[in-house]
Amino acid sequence: MKNIAILCSGGDVSGMNAALKRFVEYSFDKGLTPYFVERGFEGLIDNKIYKAGYSDVAGIISRGGTKIHTARSKRFLEQKYRKQALDNLKSHGIEYLIVLGGDGSFKGMQKLSDESEGLGFSGIPSTIDNDIAGTEYCLGVDTALNIIKYAIDSIRDTASSFGRAFVIEAMGRECGYLALVSALTSGAEMCLIPEIPYELDHYKKRFKKQIQEGREYFIAVVSEALKNSEHIAEWFEQEIEVESRIMVLGHIQRGGNPTVYDRLMAFKFITHAIDGLLEGDQSSVVCYNAGGFTRQKIENVAFKKYRINSELLKLGTEFNK
Ligand code: F6P
Image (cartoon, rainbow, N blue to C red; front, side, top):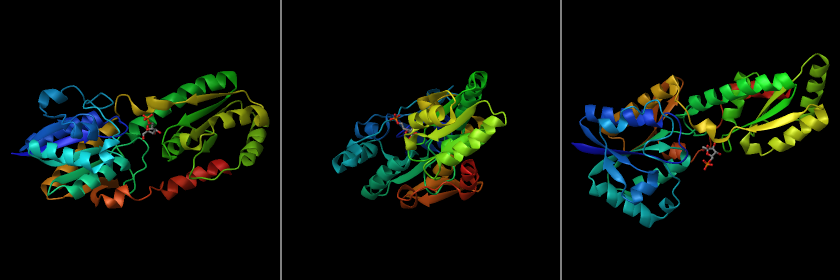
């Protein structure tokens, strides 16, 4: 029996637990012995590695976060700690490692792969930011978008009751994907993201006209990357003359009951990762594009810049007309 391990690294996402469940069950189906690594690369360094069984994953599919915890590891940037991590993997006889994380985690995985002798590594894009090159979907994004949708639907109730402008700040680090898709699907009047240049004067002209024509309240979705939520709220008060409030959605976007889509994607990502390792992939990332899965070399994913698809961007430019 070969041994296979899994870890979660960086920001947690809803769907990681569903992935852990599939990992344990599919490993057994394939004649592998599954291991969990606690707290990402930190646990790899500290030898927090243990055999996983059916009871470890019972009842977790509906829970957000990750049962095996996650971490951002500074120590992993140092070669001596990576060596310790590799020694720990070897001491457990582990031949394959699956990493759930974002591009930072994949850079770490690439280094480990370069320094290991013959171990197999597979990455599963997992970040609500949806900012990984080579894949149009990252685990957890659908759940995050649905949480934002519920939040904006609720905010709309109070925004309309009071006739206010709400500036809603979405996560995404440097990437405007969450804000853009949320603005498009929640009927927002304004969407500000780093990928699309905007002119507040255009908005002003349009909003003033709309107020004359009967618009009573505004929903603005802004990306955290722009760091301008307060400025936009003040702009609404001073230039549009509408009372405003700011709603920073924050970490609720990362948690909660995973959607059906994320549970299914978790299932598929893990299946492709394990199949790839068993077919001899040494170091790849499972990517999802145009409805299909491929396995890409880590360097083509971790070291390239993600770009939001042009059709979505085009729709986003309409906010600024
Ligand atoms: O990368 C996921 C993410 O949630 C980003 O959207 C956000 O900027 C960041 O992590 C927050 O990090 P932390 O959980 O360390 O506050």
